[in-house]
Amino acid sequence: METTVKVRDPLIDVLKGFAIILVVIGHASLWFSGDNRTNPLYVTIYAFHMPLFMFLSGYVSFNKRREINLGRRFRVLVIPFFVWFFISVAYHGYIFDIDKIFFYLSKLIYEPTRGMWFLWLLFWECFLLYIALKINKNHHLWIMIGLWGILIFTHRITGTHRPYYGLPELCWYSIYFILGYVVHLYYSKVIKTLRSIGWCNLVLFPCLLFWEIDENMYFLYSIRLYLLAFTGITASYILWEWLCHWDSKAKKILAYLGGISLEIYVTHYYFRFITTYIEAYISNNLYLNILLFTIFTIIGCDITQRLIKNIEWLRKILYGR
Image (cartoon, rainbow, N blue to C red; front, side):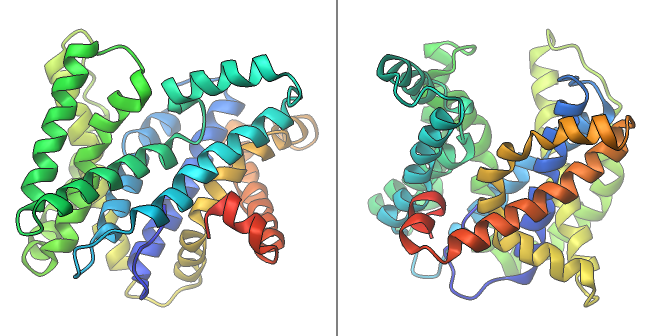
């Protein structure tokens, strides 16, 4: 959720803004529905929104120099990952319980999805890119694909159902990071194809949502998951590229939110308490509640980051800026 280029691409910021709104809506749909993972809104969003974020992260990781500042990525991604863990420890009231801290810290490292997992995974995606570039800049893309294959092999021999330091998630999301990187690397060659596929996938994506496959049919189930993510990414890209032709208020808002997507990602969890007040005093309608929560939370995250922005040392450790 960070950018490595000095000149920002408005479309990428709009897509990041769109994706971070989906993140907030997705979590709200769980919190208001009692963790119901079968509601249509949740199913639709979770089919593609984090692959879209990883695609965008791969896209902005390309630069013409074919270099990557791994130290900067560590500061932007890994330090906030652990800092927010300690904030969570303080938030839940066991900051002085050393045994409990070490217990949950070890579980976090073993299973990063317990924390701000996207930051952790994105750093390791960048690390793989860094290794590939160091080995051979001319063939680094093939090396990246080879490293992805090694990850998959390692995952298979270590057990497919174990968390294992984020390895399963790294295997899953690497393809989208690589895809985003490839689109930027060969942009002039692939954009026409991407647009054609994207318009088709606006129809194919909802069709795939209705195509239910038993999880026991592992191969077909996996293919469907990849197709859902791929069609969702390409459809989102082409739809927002078309909508961005108009200089609308929505475009400006999304571009702004895209610029602070990391800040929203790491802080929106702490506005969960709002759900209680919305349900108690405003509405018992699931979708209205989600809409209100999303609006209030994004405004709250924006106010929070504006306050923190003026405190340089705090901005660095919380947001890596």
